[in-house]
Image (tube, protein in one colour):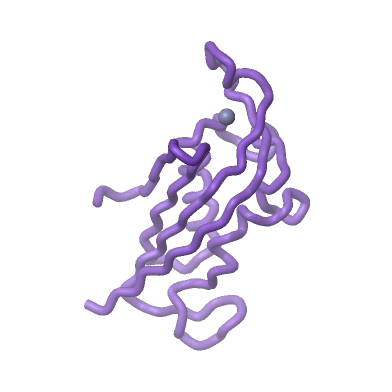
Length: 129
Ligand SMILES: [Zn+2]
């Protein structure tokens, strides 16, 4: 079966605090989050910017979270205010997965990896692999 796998990476800077955490992560602090998104599809689709069926999806749509907060992204935001879930790396990955899914055509398998630090990251997908 023909298969295309897109990969993209970006970073965003954001502040957060983990409410209810018994330790220093409960206090306000920041990270440069790195995000890797993998998008796998067995067919090609049109996009907002290309009407013919020649893309899995637009890289721009995968990178929405890198945009500045006032433009709808997560860069330079206080995550506890900009996302409606707990701000653990696990929940941030799940949130980015869900929001990205809403921006791209159906039938694309997404894997989202979020690095909170250089040495600590989490992968999220909504299917067993
Ligand atoms: Zn943190």
